[in-house]
Image 1: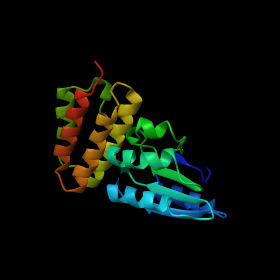
Image 2 (image 1 turned 180 degrees about the vertical axis):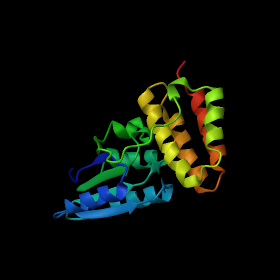
Image 3 (image 1 turned 45 degrees about the vertical axis):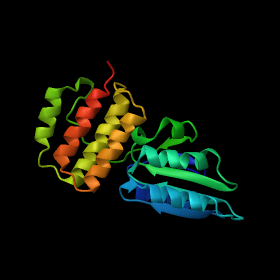
Length: 204
């Protein structure tokens, strides 16, 4: 791991930030860490920090469980053409939510996932109205915190299955699900909406 512009995929954001801090020598670190969703105002702050003049190299670490396409597009220009002596490190748990435009500009490092993830009890390759209904029924008592973990798992499975049109529209589904859970929407409703919309994005 180095203090250079990159995307780091990590299930433990706090630990990854600590590891990066341990690499600090003469660099200045600026950290913008969000527990769940990285907001537009957070992106504006990161851009402001990038344009602040400094003699030493400034490493801007931005981290969150999800970065919406709107936020990523806002960050794109400064990532594409960073001001002098500025490095951007973006940390998030799922590669599925990173836009192709960002991926094509920054190297991606996937840190080994220490904890064994519970297998998703839903075959996204065989997704249908019937399997969506059954899966939502089994999670009708799941709370918002556990549902966020589930949404994250579904996003990873969707990208690895290669059975979906993973364009900006599809990635927005996952960001919107996190946002809906943050504002108090019923978790089963969020799950149902996500899976039905994902089903519509399935490759024919």
